[in-house]
Amino acid sequence: MNTNSSLSHRSKEPENSILYIVGTPIGNLNDLSIRAINILKNVSLIACEDTRQTLKLLNKYEINNTLLSFNMHNAKSRIPKILQILKNKESVALVSDAGMPGICDPGEDLIKTVKLNELEVICIPGPCAAITALVSSGLPSSSFIFMGFLPKKKTERHKVLLEISKSEKTIIIYESPNRLKKLLVELREYCGGDTEIQVYRELTKIHEENVGNNLNMVINFFEDQDVKGEITLVVKGIEKTKKELNYLDLKKELLELISAGLSLPAASKYLAKKKEIKKSIIYSLYGEL
Ligand code: SAM
Image (cartoon, rainbow, N blue to C red):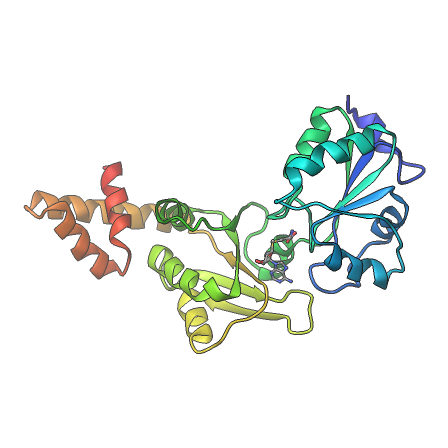
């Protein structure tokens, strides 16, 4: 059983039978903590997403340790193996290709299983693209929603985009460079072109770039570009009063059009054009009437 006191003081690391979740750099290899180096040097085994990627990091720090590939394709067979290693009083470090394991990276199921088996899990915190982007953005950071990668399926994506458009909290999104422009246009359709956004490309790397202001400007900026590198977006939540007004007004207008005899599809088409938003947004509002 885990207790606070058992976690409060560590005289010697790593300890036996502990799974260490180790945060690694998201680009700049200098962003590895001294504590992380010690753990990676001295655990019995390092479970990593891609051995070639982790080797680059280990070589830089002259760490010579055993690697075990652990990714979404082999997790099912690897979890019992890692569990057995921990039960045999050995220690294991879990790393991903970049950043914090478990954040859009493998780890969640392993950590859950280790805890279910009443073994200890200790995190050696490190960089995370989401948090790096959020704190750099200047947008409200005391409360936020991390969306990760948006779903690709149309209905699920619509639901999430609608949630984003109604959120009062800052939203963090991961996206691949080839899908960035499509996502920006969708965000404009759902949230409006004047919504504040900060886009981060290649954080901590040589070509680190921040493009920000509002969605209209960011869309213009990327329009003619062949976007490359890793991307994180931070979107400002809607102000409460604005949100209530927008949706109340929209609902009111929709009701008026329908009472005046327009069908739902016709009223939605008209309002979508007028407000420059998707028809599906109006349909979902109709469901709330
Ligand atoms: N575990 C990682 C973390 O803690 O941030 C995230 C891994 S996820 C598979 C990879 C995504 O994270 C990228 O597609 C991108 O959206 C974001 N990302 C990772 N590194 C980044 C960087 N250097 N700059 C901007 N975004 C980054």
